[in-house]
Image (cartoon, rainbow, N blue to C red; front, side, top):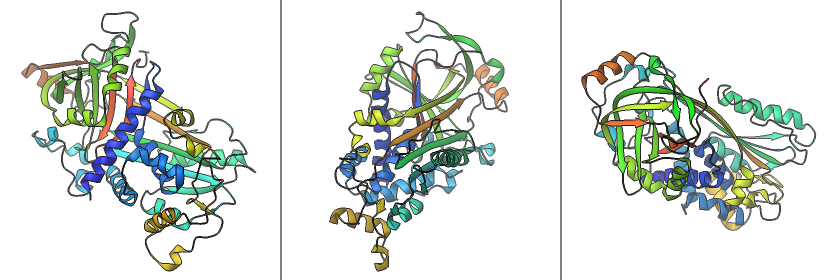
Length: 437
């Protein structure tokens, strides 16, 4: 475990999320999984040379790419562990967790209390000879698949297979990630999705959920939306940053693993939230999280079910990552070869073999392998998640007056973060929550 590299990877994911969000900004609600997207980019980086390697390296800003892949793979393994005890020793607790008197929560140990499932598949045209070093590394380090599909001869079957792969890895929560026909000229598709399920450490009070106002342009202004607003109370991590002009509250999930962090400008509106997003960096967000501590709070928060499909090709071209989509500029020649790579006949580590091929400019690679698209889909639900803790929450509110009142009735940013690895699973701007039924 290399915590310094691990933290730099987590920062890279969060910075990517913030930059991507600024390029997607249109004043509407947006939600996506930066981790899932960056995971796919890491798979491409592993097989890249030349300009493609240089472009993709800017996402991570970690010169030692062998160390990057080793540590990122370990982080993804830890991310998918169901309990804190199963995670690599040495990952520290977030400050507010370490300073809190954390009660043992037996419900957190139940199967399914905290689930993370990643699906990342690279699907390439049949007829390409796959680099055995590359295939071995993505399987062993990233637990990802590289599959051959006949896009040219049977595009409908290829579409079915890709959709089935993603559905299987997300427990059927992400279906039809490819909704339209696949062009017969396709040579590669990356399909990525992330399924996350966890229960609140303190449940929202189901009987308290009711229609309430949401103000996209600021509290008390028009237009007014009606949304289903949930309510709860308890001791929540909280911090106000007057330099950045915002507040942050954490809604922890059971199991001492993940937290939904909500960042909201003091006088929030769509315009103010977009301006805040431009000021924020990964270091600033991590700085706020490090200064949080638990305070008695009342929380009102919209009930949401959001689905988002994003075609990333155009936005990534605007972000300076367009080379992988260009037949002229692209070089992913460590993924597929003209003839079987012989490095393993000499023994050695497959990751080291790939690095040696990249540095030497060898590998017999296919230079005609181009990414046609990166398809991303998210299914994101926020609800009360049961009523088992409702009575104790009500009792708490009666016994102790809150010193924080947090109302999610104006636009806010949401980050679902795996605290041990600091990886951001979901990132979004909620400018218009779903309307109340």
